[in-house]
Image: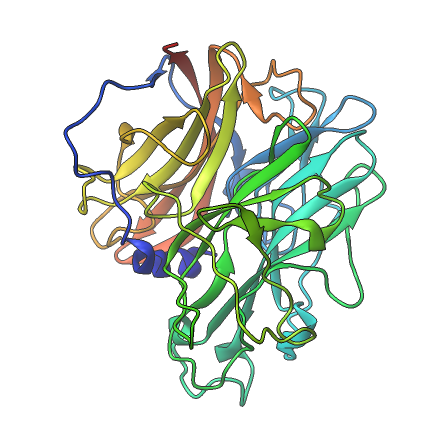
Amino acid sequence: MIRRTALLLLLGTVGPAAAAPEPPLSALTLVGPPSVMFKATRDACDGADVPDASARAFRDASGALALFGMHYRNRALRGPDFDRLKLDCTVVLDSGEKPDPALYDDRSWITAAWTEDGRAVAALVHHEYQANEHPGRCRSKVYMECWYNTVVAASSTDGGRSFIRAAPPAVVAAAPFRQEVGQGRHRGFFNPSNIFADGRWRYFFASTTGWDGPGSDQPAGVCLFRSDDPADPTSWRAWTGTGFTAAFPDPYRKPAIRPETCKPVAPFPTPVGAVVRHRSTGAWIAVFMARQGEGFPQSGFYWTASRDLQSWDVPRLLIAGRTLYDDPCGAKGLIAYPSLIDPASPSRNFDDAGDTALLAYVTLRVEGCTITSDRDLLRRPVALKVWP
């Protein structure tokens, strides 16, 4: 997933609004130093255990915590609270590295989860078909020219202790075309945010590199999806600008005659790390990472706020630092994968926050121009303020 993030530079087409800055809707303030939640060189079960996605947590039926955000051999950090999380070496969802793209079982990351009762858990999986690793599947040997990405679903009936894939695969969001030997660039939907609730509805953001086609041009950007039943992967629909009506089914089983499109939501130039709802005001707060340029004065983590999930205010810098979208050469380290979690949230899925929360994120050590697997999952306390 290190290499996959480099391609997100392709999404840098949607920046902050060019209009004069408006008064901020919210304020996020760092109020304490970082502390380590997981250290790969100390806490790993094997070489696959590195933080490689934004942290996602939920409470199981017993009240214990499960936190995901690791690599494509999916394991969870577990414990009674956020101060006592430890990596459970049980693999809850492995990656089959299978050469058939129609199976959606090459490399998979659990990137979002939702549970109502702590037992039945619906997961969104960032699936990468890395065609350059499979002979005859890509004319190029360049990773970025062969990458075919899809959001698929997995489910658990034991509180996240194990996940299964549906047969046939349960596709949540796929590009309306199959993997191509000569595709030449990264394609598809990828990097779901956390799932978050508003009344009967559940939402998540996902990124797409877009596509061109007869009567169906999909711009690159971040799209908003909605469902009233996350346990049903076919129920998710994306915002089109007029309603939540766009479906992106499996092109291997239901080819689209006229592909639907979603309307990207500004001001996100890259995948949304996390969204939480401020409990006392109802405002939404999102965090993400961005590189310097295209309206962003510095590389680092940014936040923005919204009243309706579609109109967001001007992003503001929370932490400055080189990210996975920056050139790593010469850097001592990078920062990546921000998320917001309030340990005091009454929500089983930690999709809301009070006036304090934890910013969870990953630091990655660099050697020369190489991003290494020496990574830490950190947390840092932040104060949240939203104006009426």
